[in-house]
Image (cartoon, rainbow, N blue to C red):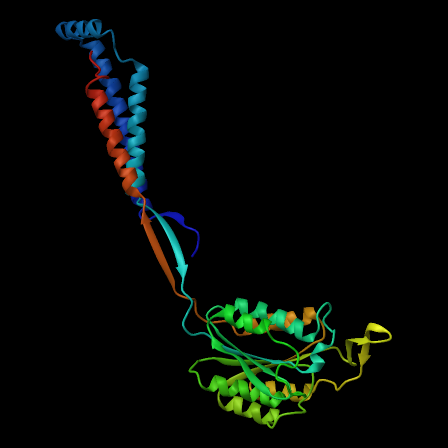
Length: 345
């Protein structure tokens, strides 16, 4: 809910009331001055005697200061009336997240090669988790799911509107959590597709991140891509890792903990590109943390919701106290002018 703000429901009515109040005040002042002039010009002897006796008895005759006070009192009361006529309101807005947006499955490689320290100060998996969490936090109204794969694939988090739950599952991802060796890109993609297939949605996408090539599982990645295309599922593929092998931290009983470079199979960019092309998605290569962040930012921009989430407006009327204050001040001014501050010739 947004912070409450004050607005006026009928500002022009308030302005008109303020203008009328100013005109009435000026007219009253003019009439008062004209009346005093007539009093000085046409003073009746009997009336003057009565006023003199009254002033002598009470030792009090209202002067210019008292008249100024009455004028100020009337101005304040008329100002309150003008503000009340403008109908001030305290408005707060609560935005309701839509019940259906984009359905997104994050399919993340958890094979042992994801331990490579390509994204300093993080390894490949840590970097993927960090950027994925930032991505999920921005996707209001979307259902997010998580598939992890190594030599096989599992659904780690079903599609959910609860972003905090999805983030919690992402943070729990670990190397080798599927307990099978290898990189089953086809299985990871097909598992994501089968889960998306079960839910009705106008827009479905898979973001598949890997650092290798398909060398495990029973599903060919291209076959999985064609299945996604037939179901209207768009796939964004990301190759994560530097070219020329990865840097790993190893612990040796003689040399202790040290970093070494291991030659490894290069990312199968041709297959990842073909998967993206078949499904009308895109392939990205990210060799650094900034590049990986940029990739997810671009996907976030490309897959924005086309509609504004509904809003609920809450109004709190503020004019009653102003109206009561105006009536009280007007009543006080009238009472004083007719009694204590009564002006006699």
